[in-house]
Image 1: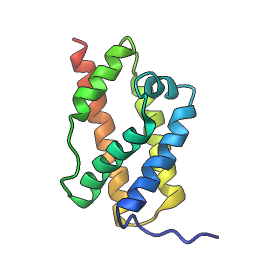
Image 2: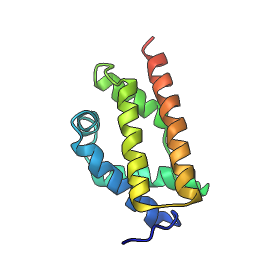
Image 3: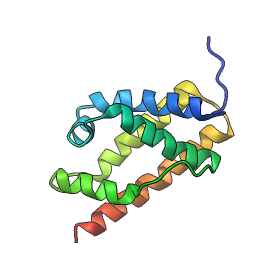
Image 4: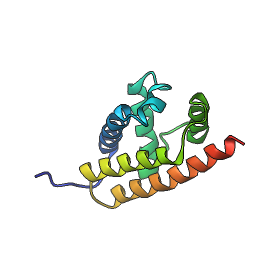
Length: 129
């Protein structure tokens, strides 16, 4: 039996992001959204590792505009991203954290993802107006 520890460093963040996207890539609902716009998964995993490292450790290692990117992804997918897709995304994220980690930073990763999912969907919906 594996004893879970908290997210402690970039390597842990990389593990989390990598394991999460392995699930997302093959999901019949989410996979197409990601696979239609991401051609270089290795770079994407590094970019998202930078994002989550910034979120969880308050390091300035991420550059980009996630909101703009998600609006673009929605447009490239004929404005078909729905609230349910964010629910599936969040469930995979929470499940992956629970499989790998336990602790304060793991809980922070869950809370940040919940807030981001709500905010992103609201902004995507607004951008359609």
